[in-house]
Amino acid sequence: MSGDARAFWIASPGRGEIRAERVPAPARDEVLVRTLHTGVSRGTETLVFAGRVPESQWPHMRAPFQEGDFPAPVKYGYLNVGVVEQGPAELLHRTVFCLYPHQTRYTVPASAVTVVPDDVPAHRAVLAGTVETAVNALWDAAPRIGDRIAVVGGGMVGASVAAIATAIPGVRVQLVDVDDTRAALAAAIGVPFARPEDARGDCDIVVHASATSAGLSTSLGLLAAEGTVVELSWYGDKQVSVPLGEFFHSRRLTVRSSQVGGIVPGRRRTFGDRLALALDLLRNPAFEALVTGRSPFDELPDVLARLAAGSLPALCHVIDYPEHAIDRPEE
Image (cartoon, rainbow, N blue to C red; front, top):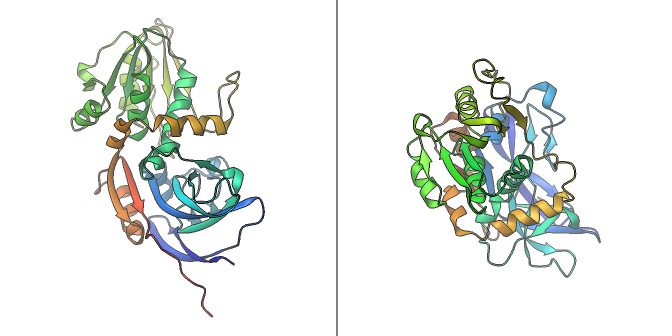
């Protein structure tokens, strides 16, 4: 063993705890990573924390290195940035991103980590999974030069979509949200902000990421004829109303899903290509606006409970790990 580690587990729905873990020494094709930061995905992770993953989705919602099963006990998470302490020479001492849960140290195949560019701060790199989702959504949406695009829902994913889309030449992009405080976020990423009642319509594409029925209704209402809503929200076990009356058929509107677990056919890109692109895009300092809070690892059980309850407002909440965190196994 390379030494013990500590990991965050959901012990039961709504209750988390930190447990001791055994970490095996890496084999020839593996790396031992010491975690620097993890990120909490407020949408998906709070639904998992609350035990709101429908049983029908348990196989599909498994994280790559998840342990345990839904609803609990389960070790869940997928936004991890650390430094390689043991492994191949080309990765040794490099900062890497991995789809690993909240744990102080871990061993994974070398192929499971992606090197973080030197000019991307390690704490910002935890956004790679979110930006990767946004990239996938825009591949599904396939915007063209000059398109009119609205993003409804100014959370982590929605803001990431807007930040990337605004770089497309000639596009009109707006971030739409019922929360007026999102106006400051929109300004930070260089995108106009509007409340739903003030949003500009006649859109070719609307990306919906609010996870509410009202947001989906707004999205459909903003579309021009033949327009498309790309649905990014994941609702867990919540029922959703979709307004398919009025103008839905006369405008020949489309609602299509986008899910990071698949790449649109014909794209000729691998999952590794997509993640590397996301990390490259994080060179843009505008993404710093999505990091809205930081806490030490030992406080994670309380932090996730507060995020799930809504008493701790956040976009991406970063968890910081002690520089020399390691727990030796008891003799």
